[in-house]
Length: 449
Ligand SMILES: Cc1ncc(COP(=O)(O)O)c(C=O)c1O
Ligand SMILES: N[C@@H](CCCC[NH3+])C(=O)O
Image (cartoon, rainbow, N blue to C red; front, side, top):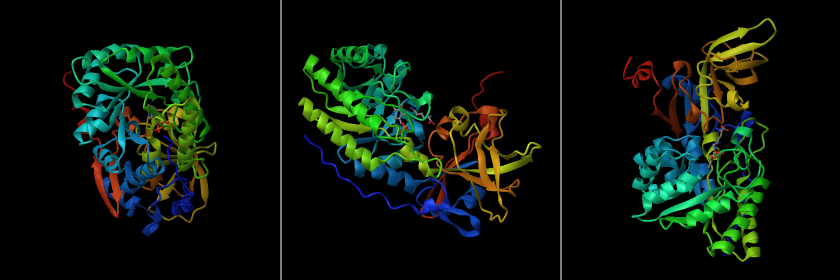
């Protein structure tokens, strides 16, 4: 079957572009030099709920989810929960018709407890525990992605006397893509998936097909994260279709699903390139149709697993300045009340961010400063060489856009600073989703001394 594809006109530039950063589309200048997001002032919301505060624009999450559904009407779109998950987020993506990719029993349990339909959940993980697999079976998750030899027998043993489990096999096509070596999973020499080259993938597929309780629905690959070009995805289609053909020729089965994972990149700085979803939709579905036609293969249903591209641009982190230090060598350190425990990405990957003063107008000229966190490491720098008003002072509020993905979800308990609160904004109203971690929380898990 050939899939219909629709080419969309490029979106009109968001008014937010005028604000000089990757702000949510709803961002507007507000009263008192505040910045409105979702119709609510960031400074006003930070005053109300305290800092550091993560503000999530519900409308932005929903419109991004909808854009995926519009661009890929025949595909299944699973939001990758690892980017950020809470009950509200699960509700929003479920209501917009997306499924969910989870990679732990924690994510799985949270989603199902929030009411997310288990049949629309896919479970990932390179080291799923027996308990995790049992939980997935008990909750009746729709799909499990096989990512290790031991898992095949382990899972098969759980389903022998039960209804079959739909599975995908995660393969490694040998394609390098992604913003940092630590997130490039499309190549050999890293822990995820079965490499196609050398035959590991073919062996795993044969073993899965041998298990009566496992229903092999298709192949999966995830190349990496924060990818802005399309070519790696087209190469992945080529590699996976070759493998689908190989499976048909060896085993006489045509697998109905092809999951290309996530990895769709967003803007962190104003001039950054960005993953082009409409172009991806057209070119990937066309390439898939062409390659399948060449091999006389039924076109499998496409699955994608975007995380960052849905949550990232919807989040803004708001910090309060605690101190401003001018050093004799000319550097200025603006220290805020969060840092690497709520956003480890700059320290882990050297990731860039932009930052803006909110809630106060400054007529001072611009200065180049390092916005640093409050943790006990010199590497706790949130934004190096940020351009901010020269008269920044303790008490000021700084807002960092593109903060919705892989910040809170990777937040740590370092220095017992406590994880920030999360508020949702929509239609001029703000509501607290997750309360701030307090000093009382730190002892809650202690059971002895
Ligand atoms: C298997 C898998 N799917 C989806 C994702 C989501 O990636 P991204 O947030 O870059 O779209 C990841 C993380 O990179 C992943 O490992
Ligand atoms: N944590 C990474 C993304 C990892 C994606 C998970 N496979 C980042 O912040 O860029």
